[in-house]
Every structure is written in structure tokens, then in C-alpha cells.
Length: 253
Ligand SMILES: [Zn+2]
Image (cartoon, rainbow, N blue to C red; front, side, top):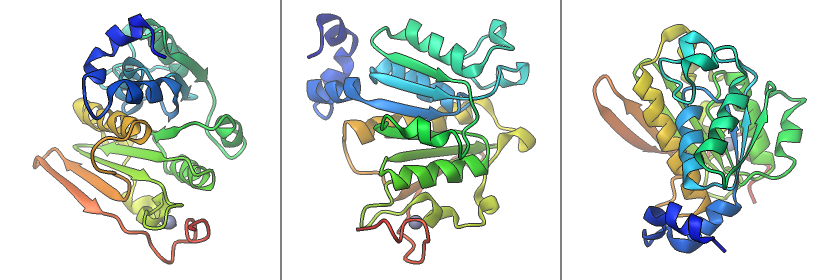
């Protein structure tokens, strides 16, 4: 049951027929694992906390740097030098006391991913900045049948996909990128990124995480969204499963 304070806080959700009290309750009972508290992670964490997702685990091994502040809206100048995960978790608590935020200051690797997935998050949102982590997170999400929202940005572009590769007609992340994935990797460290691009794509990732928890509208798994802000072209491609995919071929039932 939602208390009177929550009914007031989430009134604009609850009035939506597609969400309602039951959807809000699902959000309150959900646990989202957010990989990366950077440009994408900032709006993800802010919107999921504001939306009343009951538990957020925020993983980032980095500290706030001056060069982050152009796009990472979770942080202010006095946060420079602080671990991002800790600063983010503190902000969540101030934003919404109904949300339990857990900061993990660690690098996501083969040694740490198991512990992160131990208490079965409802959804994983991956907004990390490197490809090895993306593959590891994607493979682990697939193996444990946890929906994955994967978002990436670079320069004036963004891409976003939702993966549930264990389902018969849905692709996994490797169906999209293959095994030699550098060709599709977007990274912003070397090539730069316009600040609001991370905000838009991160906000979309938050929306898709909510859709996985309290389903509304059409299912977005199996569709890839490509956003080009130079030409202002937004496309959604159907992403069929790759029958030869080594990652999801074996898990698909
Ligand atoms: Zn696959």
C-alpha cells in the first residue's frame, strides 16, 4: 500500500490510466541496478528516484571531475573529487526519502558482477563508458534473465535498446553488436559529446526502465532507437534475434 505522502508525491503518475496505483506500487517494489553514474546515469538516477523506484543500486568507480560537470547533472562543483556513486546516492536520498539508494564504488568486472546481481534487480540500466563492461553486463543480464536497458552517446548521437534475449523473438545485446563490437561503440571521452545529448538519451533510458517495471504502451524490446541530433533524425529499427548468436542461442527456450 502507498501511504498518503506517496499518493500525493506520485499523483501525476497515478492519474495516468497506464500506470495508476498498481503501476506505482510496482515501481515502489522494484530494484534497478544502474551501471555508471555519468552523463547517462545522471538523468536515469534522477528520474527513477523521482518516480519512486523503491531501490536503486548505483555502481561507479570514478570520482567527480571538473570535466564531468558539462553534462553530468547529478553533480555540482563542490562534488569534485567525491566518488560519483556516493554523491549520487546522497542526492537520491534528498530527492525522495522513499527510495533506498545503495552506492557501490567499484569497477564492474567479472569479479564484481556476480555480487551486484545477487539480489536480483528488476532491471539493469547500463550507461557505462566502455565496451568490455557493456558486454559483461549484457551477458550477465541475459544469463539471469534480467531486462537490460542499454544506452550510449557520442558527439551528437545516441542509441538505446532494451534487451530480453532469452525470449523467443527478442534479440540479446550481442545479436546487435556481434563479438567484435568496436564498430558500434560510442564513447564520449575521446570524441566529445554535447551535454543535452546525454540528458535526452539518459531520460529515455529511465523511461524504458519504468516501462519494463510497470508496462505501458508497446513493448520496446527488440527495437533499437538511433538518435542523430546533427540532422535531427530519430529512427527506430526492428532488431531481430540473430539465429547464429552464440550468447542467446543457447538460452532461448
Ligand atoms: Zn543474441
